Length: 184
Image (cartoon, rainbow, N blue to C red; front, side, top):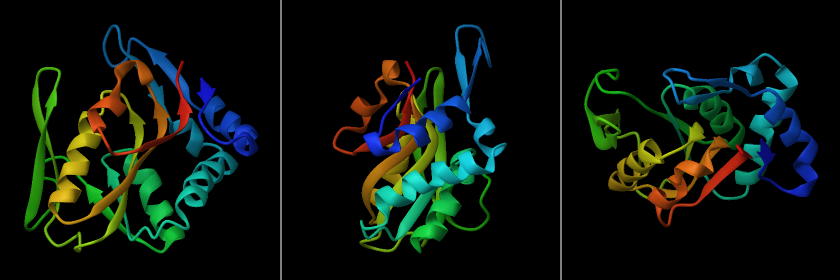
């Protein structure tokens, strides 16, 4: 895996990349699963990961950090806390009580949805969307649409890993993507 960041952050990014394990043929043959849980086994690496995101967004007026279920939930609340922003969970269908709004997105075979609470976004919130990984960009694209429909300005999507061969950035169009690590 190669680093995708500033030269000053190379050692930090290298530690993060070394904590990511790739499992071939998981969850099915032909798929390589990039597992970020090794980051959480080393507190200093988890701190480095959060620190890179916080440093990037601390002066951008971020008021909302949205985390995509499930691994985006691990990173996003801590980033939000450090930035003094609110955290908004973006969940799979029927996981949030109360009134929700949703956005559908395409999967390889079929569709899925993500949801958030009505009222979680205020007009003119400046948001980042956090997930562990960007591959095809389908989930992030749905998250951008969901937040924008609710009135937020999506500043950027923030991921720990990017799998560039899946061309997820292209699907996101004008929305910028920041990835700490780019998989080869």
